[in-house]
Length: 250
Length: 197
Image (cartoon, rainbow over all chains, first blue to last red; front, side, top):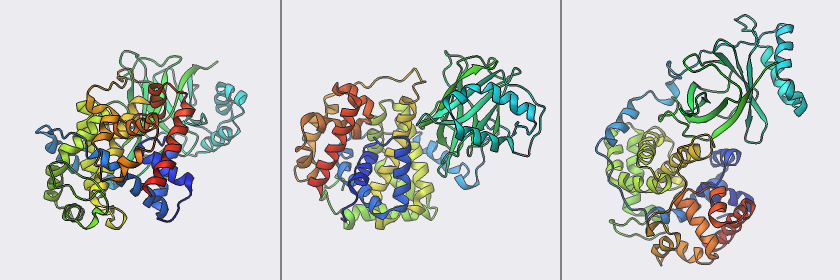
């Protein structure tokens, strides 16, 4: 085959080994679609390493597995699907263009400044510019900044005293077709991660935490990439794209 | 490309024209046309092997079954996007399965949030990477080329591919720093590419 850039061939190999992580894996998946030489390198690694798959001992599938697959086939196709009503948060931009609300939010996120997050500031201004302000202005009692894999601020969760919470993304997230973003929290360590919403893309949404204990400090929030209707297992099954913990506002 | 026990062993390279690969490609074309019996035919033929592969990666039966289940739904939905000029159908099917299984594996092990993750334990002799490499076909390039790697590095490649170990897990298992594990993999891939061509 045409000599591929060695770094790209290495990426292709790592991708096939399952060792490309986060952005690297996403980059590999993009390149497979767009770069024929890269696609051939991936196919070559798959073909070669596939010999190891041929050595796996077959296991008889359970009798109901085919029925489970057929149920999946009958589910709406990715293009037509929308997030499920039960798990889906209601799109509800809670941000405001009112200056005092901005000040409150900004004050509550004061620690951002220490980190010098100018990009986050710009994104926040954009979010605040959204016209669809619906609710009254309210101060969150807890705020979590979710950091992405490169420790960049990727989203903010504001939790309010009455159990409502909102998610405000700070950066676009590349959601492949047929996948969705699922928002998780741990409000009870005994219970582990609980899903609080499934999104088709990164957008500002209200999260319904009212069935959970009141939010508290150091409560984990995380977003993972999942099948389009959300994790089938009730726990994250895809990579965690961002996570963070709540801090109380002043 | 693949040689499947229980089926005639075919050349490990250039499988494109043999009848097994032709069947899979044609069957995928029928899937793309909405023929559910075609998907069932793939299932009858491949599901047991797929479950075995998923089990090696995921270690838990329920998760392995889920991976196979999701893989078949994806095969059905993506069959129209399968391009036989870019690789054979069976390789494509197994790539769908591996991607799904690895996503499940990484989602669970990399959250650092889920406490029921069981650390990797290699139970049987079959799980030993050296035993596995020994079973590879002597006629294939992979065995010969893996043989060129130092033992540690060969094992790292096999453990990553077969059992889905991450860089961090490889480092822990090999008792080397993370950076060392990563550079072992990278250099091993270069060596393998030179050998495999």
